[in-house]
Length: 609
Image 1 (tube, rainbow, N blue to C red):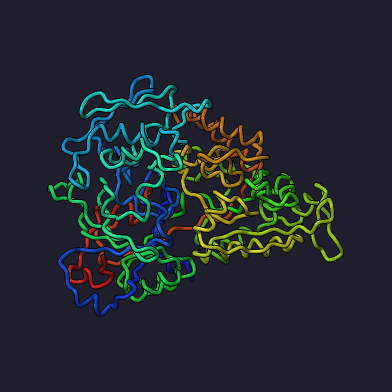
Image 2: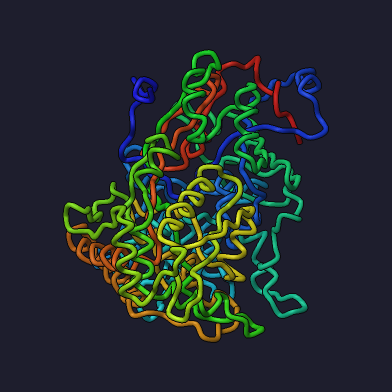
């Protein structure tokens, strides 16, 4: 039956998502729809949604994928969503030196911040020297700029009033794309916070522009600027009157005057509001695809299939042997011994029926994953080319466990070397039903080889705290985006020093050294492979490094790759200029180009300040 729904529904096989895609919805506590309809307005408005509150309005401190900062900032260059080439943004031109160590950017004339102040080369220098490259600021972006095994960073200097030069101590091929797309921040608003400290001796920048700050004080340079924020309800943005971009006819962009981003944690609530006609778009949950496809014409919307994601969907184990500041192990030492046994992880990989996940949970709307890199990457190593795979084989899983010293009791329960029942928790976020269904499937599959698991279904913000701060978890069903075009995009996940090295999270920022934390030889090898690959400038020269990286990951299985779902988005037909492509955040990667076709419908739903 699904094949009939897909007639005329093309799949873009090069679709890339670099961060978590946002869904769209509307709810305004304290306001009825009839009241909203009674307040006509000539301004165009789009209503979107995110499942969680933003963690900050300070781009240098952002960690959560759920934020609105990408609406309000831009970098020196941007990536064309169709050709994938870098194009001018704040910088009108750039050049790379023959030795590949220097990149020079020339800014556009008369750039301004959202408060009308000039945006100059001094802002670029400040953004990098005082924030991204400042080791006193625990930004997640600095580690992507490390160019060698010694931890060296690029330098930046002003050449003249419009020209800035970045210099790398070693050739580093990802430097251009990172410098190009990292947002520039306002020196006149933030400089003092990067040079003064609070009563605890911390830079004031660390607590500047939090979600408690008046949003109107947040200065930006992107298509929109902040107007208001109500926690657990909504963020409101308005068109930035000083945004640099104009269309071919000289008209100021973006076209839509106002964006209301509702905070709605439940996929079910988003779906209800979309079906009732209250929203402009929604990320389609797999369980709702058939229904929404049938009602496409009646509901006056279009489903857009963006293809599979560019990230990974996985079951990961906590391999951290360290202890917290009170001396308590992050992971129960008995469980830690299981997780750090290679045969145990490989056995789990063989025990999971991923094909059934694809068919039963995703209704066939996805593909099995095998590698940490997207199959659209030029560096992807396929199973046909020699990548190790773990096809469903519970008998082989049992054999591996027995060979490693595990055994079974008369009830068929798996016991370890000391007679302990093998039982652990599976952490999963509560906001996404298909993710929970995957965790349930893992639970059922592992029970077939005698392993008992307990689901921990928690809000995503709580999950992030456990993964990145308290580190007190056993296993996790999750996802991580990136890696389709530039492998270094996922370096923060696979590097043992990375900010998102979930399966063995080390010391971050100003944290104290973690007692008992160990780094394996294969983790160190991955770091060396990434840095070696980054010092080459042709796909051919880089390919072998990233192929070896994929083999190591699949052999060591710190995470087990599951199913990569298709991204399907439903967009109301009143929204014009909708263009989905191989790059970006779906509908939201072309925010400044979107238009509202039906002016009579504008602001009838979701008006708010």
